[in-house]
Image 1: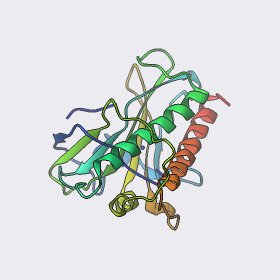
Image 2: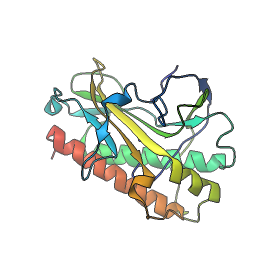
Image 3: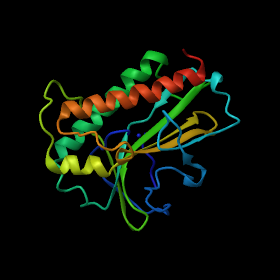
Length: 220
């Protein structure tokens, strides 16, 4: 299965489908290697979380961020959602991540000393699904401009059921440093009716996660 380069409040991503088969824990997508490591997150943490107790976080001062992907249940499962909306969401999410991460860490393109590799995916898949499609945003996808108008009804439905999954590894050795899963329904009650709502949610989630990473690595 090809791995390509995570949501308090949201979801998704798009194009270039690759069908893959995977053994997955119940209600999980298979994006992470070992869901058995996860525990319930505490206040301010993502819903399910694991941190390597032996990790020396202060040894890391750079980030290699892989492109965000979408993992969905079957090639046709997101057909009701406009493809342009998926592309817009993933582009906005990745842009938010890169901007916020760049405030605390140099962003690099290659593994090296002190480099964390971060992988994130927006997922809506189940263990019972025999086929999983992985979508990656096209290279020409770009963040949205100022249009904060209403969401398509199918996009709202997708966001309500999706999760963000992510992991952080040592970019050279591959050692797992941390991983987590966040589901929007865990927060509950916060409506996402417009693109402006989604963008605020993305920025909020990104700032929360990046702030914790900066604190753990001693960057602030």
